[in-house]
Length: 117
Length: 110
View 1 (cartoon, rainbow over the protein chains, first blue to last red):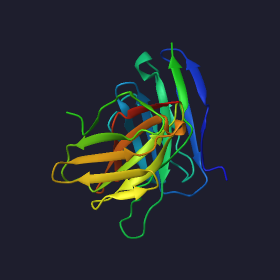
View 2 (cartoon, chains in turn yellow, brown; view 1 turned 45 degrees about the vertical axis):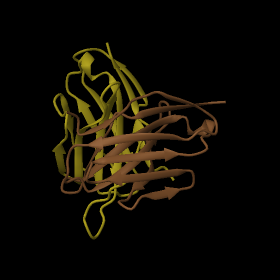
View 3 (cartoon, rainbow over the protein chains, first blue to last red; view 1 turned 90 degrees about the vertical axis):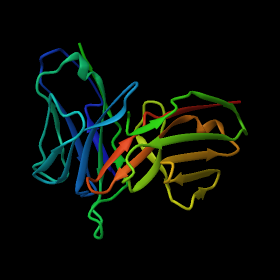
């Protein structure tokens, strides 16, 4: 029962480099989300996806790119990493309810700790 | 003003104490409300939903006041294992997005 996994768990990179964080879920959940968590800000939504090939911006999308070619995968790419993107990144997923179309409960991956030097 | 506001604490309490956390939200159209728990350096996990009539799960009681846009979580008979950060979460049904508060840190001491 893998659930939702993220890789790498820890990453150190340099300013200007491209970095891709991976997220994989085994539940076939329709919705997937990327958050970043920083002291003083709590969890902030970066991007989300309602289904394969459907993505939308969250609260803090600048500097990030996502794709969702398969339901189970939702990679997040930092095109040119900056120090301000040092953070803990959480991926989450939720199922689609037949009635409302959206589930309220999200399941989180273990997080990726990213340090940009 | 943040959409969801919590007192970050930390709340330091002895074992066996009763502790209450409060949370306010700004969007009166918010539909659903939750408390998530986050242990140090781990992912958030759903603790309980919050219903208008108030609801209880063992030692935990959640309450919602829609008129005041206020949510609370009461923990009775605190255990050492309750030490964590408690996140107040509001759900916007039309977007499917959860809005998280900053979290309130609880430290239960022996």
